[in-house]
Length: 402
Image (cartoon, one colour):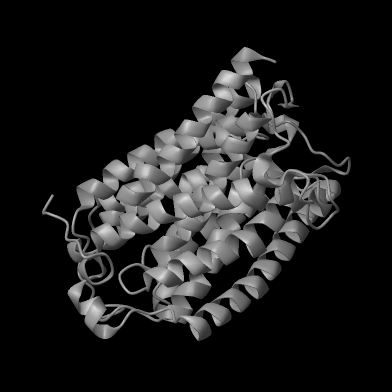
């Protein structure tokens, strides 16, 4: 056992959980009305608990045992065969189990931002459980568990496809299915606490070092470079988003700056272990600009109330990073090179194939899950519950002014 690598993976596990609780909960919570703050935090807490139990029961086994090209097997169900002496790359396998568990937690939690302020709590639980089983776990196996996309050579270091593309596409579909908030798109109440959102974004930023750097599963040069390019991408995207907002609206906003930072973090995620500082900065600029340009079309052309821009920021950013990884992984740009031997153009084709296949599967599986949930329990809270606020109507609590 390598104690240094083990310590880094355990630390990264804590950092990734920190991204969801309290980071994502505060980031999303500050953007809603105060009467819905506790419901957003409750969604994140409940998903964390649900996903953790699911991962122990069958998720890890189905995602990370050899099985076949499409799904793993149940040889490690309930983790009974993962002992203190089990090893993965000279670190305890249980450390890998926990690290990957935190990814399974944050991915469905990202979708929360699409349906805040109007969703039934039992619909959140049912959707999240089915989504983990039918979307997240198979895709994780395809790419990280030795499945068919891994065998093709798809590059996804920390989750541009597995996390951001799946969550972004599903968020857009859920938002469309549950319907818009009252007053959408031009007469919505402003965020009740932008400072909370900015603090949550800072927590996400720090936690992302474990998200990307920890995916090296070692305390080495790959981890150090992944953290470096992650930071550079966040900074470049934050600057880009702020300048575009300043130019368009004649004033820069704190909400725009932190949203740009998160867009840069999402964009660099799939490429972070394969690129150098030039690539990290370039991905940040591209992510900040393209994600910024995608926000309004979702709301005003597609007329979908993706409330907290999950698709435009995470979905678009993650997909963009997956494709640009094929360009900036070139050794001439400070990258590591490619798993296939035919250069960046061939790798770009592999990346596009993998991304397209996952998006198609996500659309089909999510549509089925939403259909079942809507028929059995319904998705949207009643008008009275929405008017009262989900904090009170769903949970019997109210948040004090902050």
